Image 1 (cartoon, helix red, strand yellow):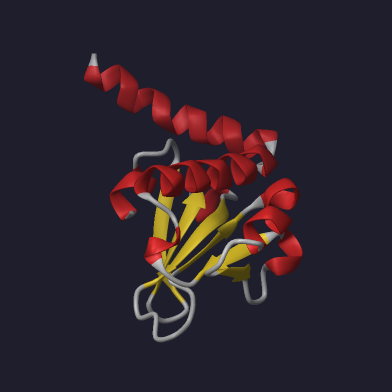
Image 2 (cartoon, one colour):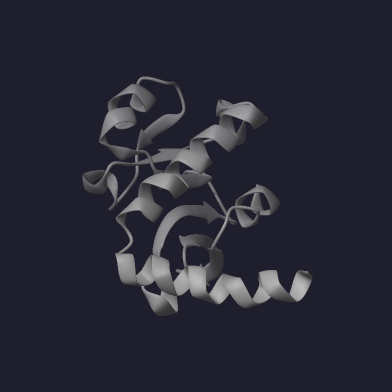
Length: 126
């Protein structure tokens, strides 16, 4: 899961709130926003929470093993209780959509800063 998330453009990760791996669309330091939280010590709680968006929120809650994310449901986040709720391709689709939802909400200035930070790396590869 981590490898798949880190392949998305402009994704950063931090460890927060104990053993929670937080994935950001953009770097937190320059105004990025979190789009997924993986609980590395899940003991009966959700294994992952992510931004579902208003269009998918209600639909996802109908699926067994998916519930409103604690503290984040008002922003249309869901919490998934087990990794087997989705197949690998479905996980990829869900989390790419979560990233896209949050990336679209970044300010123009933040998106420009992310693009500018990426350019020198691309030139160095050539």
